[in-house]
Image 1 (cartoon, rainbow, N blue to C red):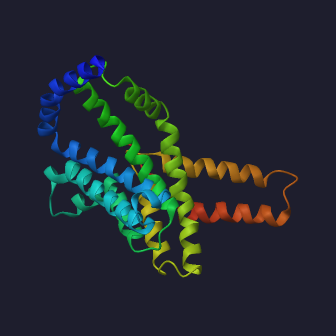
Image 2 (spheres, rainbow, N blue to C red):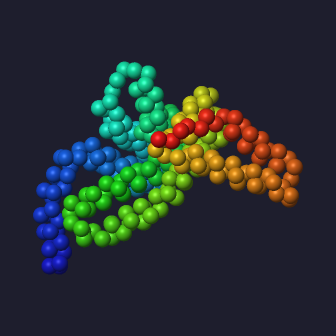
Image 3 (cartoon, one colour):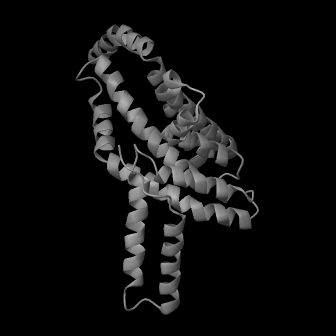
Length: 254
């Protein structure tokens, strides 16, 4: 019991440092709060009896990601606002702008749990990164359990980003299925295709582009197997051919 009191007292002494961190990094702190709240909303989709209606939790999750994207977009672009075509081109290249459009696309589509996976994975990465900053404000040895979880997230960050990229790609055929089911508008696949093009051309995040390449290699290898039936072989090669034709020109990395 005395140890708990000691820990509580030590944390209370560090609260001014946390307050100072918040005041000096309001955008990052606000984004951290939004990301943590977003993960709670997404838990509400999986466990609706705990946090209320699954549909409401889904809508809150999408609008939460919309808010986070706007805040990150403001953080990166607010000091460079210009009413020029060059600024607009720069704007649509921003990852935060991509996921702003992503949120708008699925805000008006029937709830799909898979849609929440990429934004949840990005929220985990962003929240983990800033959580470490907050823990450092409490002391280097504070909350070692939380630090362990953050280190696991950071260690698996590449796999997390690859999974997010894979999900982005798989949502393209799913939007077509949604049209057949009457749960999405006819323009949804075309709008989502433009989102996917921007993800493919992203300068800061090459994982979508790399995942397309990995899937192409995988499908071509599967089609080359002697045991592959001819009709499936032609189907796989057709999918690869269409994807290559729809892919934007390769961009120079900066």
